[in-house]
Image 1: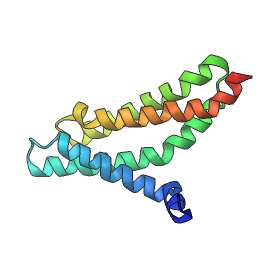
Image 2: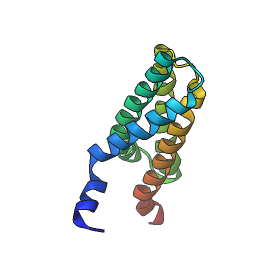
Image 3: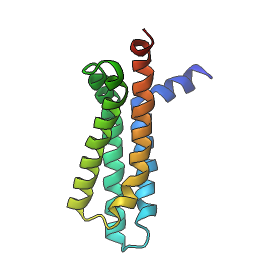
Image 4: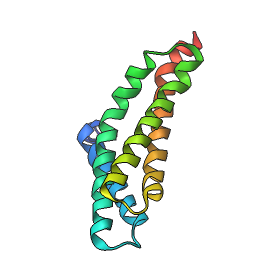
Amino acid sequence: MSSQLRSLARSSIVHVLFAFLAMGGWALFANRHHAMPRLLIAGLVQGALSAALTLCLKSTIEALSLRFRGVLRLWMPPLLACLGSTTILVAVHAATGTPEILRTIAVPLLVSTSYAVLYNYSISRGELEQ
């Protein structure tokens, strides 16, 4: 991998933009059977939420993993991150009138929770192996 490509892959801006476009696009698809203003709002809201959650998720997992030891360290940080993300997504989509809330948040929540589990495992592995 070239140094430019590696640098691009590590860029927070690239990750945030990708989250905005991918998950905002998913929200457009999930709400495609609804009228235009609601469809567009759902996509913009989910894109913005995914961008913000992507920016915060890594540091949240790192901070939470320091608060637990043993087996709790393995599953509590991703669980708390998932519950927090779910609460934020449902509350904001309900407040903005997203028609298909569950369909809209299903994929972004699956992706962010998977990332949280894998990242938490990678940083907790050292303590668990000792």
